[in-house]
Amino acid sequence: MTVTGAGLPDTHVPTGASLIPDWITPVHETALIAFLDAGDWSGEMKRRVQHFGYRYDYRARSATLDSRIGPLPEALQALAERLVAEGRFAAVSDQVIANEYLPGQEISAHVDCEPCFGEVVASLSLLSACEMRFGCLESGVRRAANLPPRSLLVLAGPARRDWTHGIPARRSDVIEGMRVMRQRRVSLTFRTMRF
Ligand SMILES: O=C(O)CCC(=O)C(=O)O
Ligand SMILES: [Fe+2]
Image (cartoon, rainbow, N blue to C red; front, side):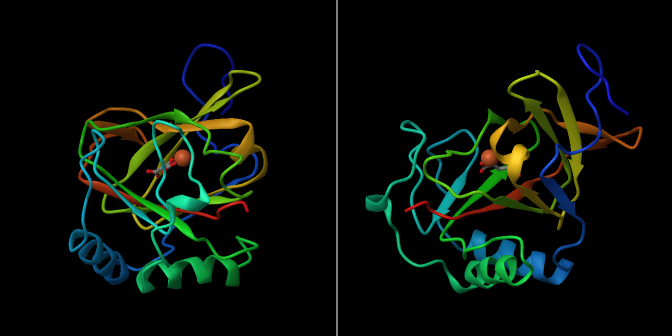
């Protein structure tokens, strides 16, 4: 279904994006959540975040060499290496952000920093589904896709450069015609520093 102009957004991801369901198992998901919850969630934003590898500066909207934190923890390094082994990334990610969304929390529409980060960005969804919205910068066409828990969303090409992505501040989503209450959702976004 494609709707242009006003009306419901299209239900497909933009060109260059792929959504891989069940990229990890429920057991792996539980282990990743335990690892993150043993870490230091930062309350600098409305939603809590944890940065790994390099710190992203939300005011400057960038990450730089001198923002280095250290190597990725083993649990994330293994996933970053898998992204290369599967041919999704050309280079192993060295920057990861964990985002926590409680029901009603959002991430506003944005394009991930192009001068800072490489050609491909991938987000792994944990615990709860949510709707992600996409907006084409040139045409204004909107699309939306449901991101199920344990799915991997890969943004490359036009989806990475020419479309914004964001998650609306809602307590529920309509998934396949049914209203589904959101639960706590955590995502892990993998990027590669560009230098
Ligand atoms: O939560 C997500 O799936 C998306 C996160 C995101 O867009 C980002 O960290 O840049
Ligand atoms: Fe993003």
